[in-house]
Every structure is written in structure tokens, then in C-alpha cells.
Image (cartoon, rainbow, N blue to C red; front, side):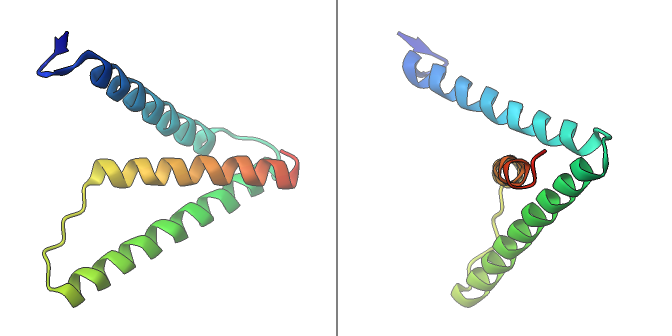
Length: 101
């Protein structure tokens, strides 16, 4: 069986991956918008700082690599958003466990 030109198993896997990434994006937005006590604000602050620094570092390395190899800069914003969401959620879990949130 095929779905839109790809095997059904691959389409189901892709759909699951997209739903998982959508859940990570929503988790990131909800945790940023949710108000709480001082400890939860510190957890979100540290998480946001870590994710921002990691993304900026990755972009700087990408720019340097593309400049040295003289290749055009091709950054996919969808992939960049998903990497930021994964980093943010992983850091959020880490800091919640570390700081007791």
C-alpha cells in the first residue's frame, strides 16, 4: 500500500515524527508563557539561556563552515525550529530535575 507516493509505513512514521515535534513545540511555548513562582521562573530562564546559546553556537559554526568552504548558506527554518524545541525540552527536563521544579 502507498500513501501519496510513499509506503504506508514510512508515511505513518513521518506522521508520528511530525506529531512528536509539534508536541515539543507546544511544550516549549506553554512553558515559556506559563507564570509561576520564583523557582519555576529560574528553571525557564536557565533553560531558555541554554537553548539560545546552543542555537547561536550552532549558527555561528554553520556560518564559519560555509564561509571557509565557500558554499551558500542553506538553513532550513523547520529543522532549526525542531532542533531548538528538542534542546529546550531536554534542558527543561534537566533543570527541573536539578532544581526541583
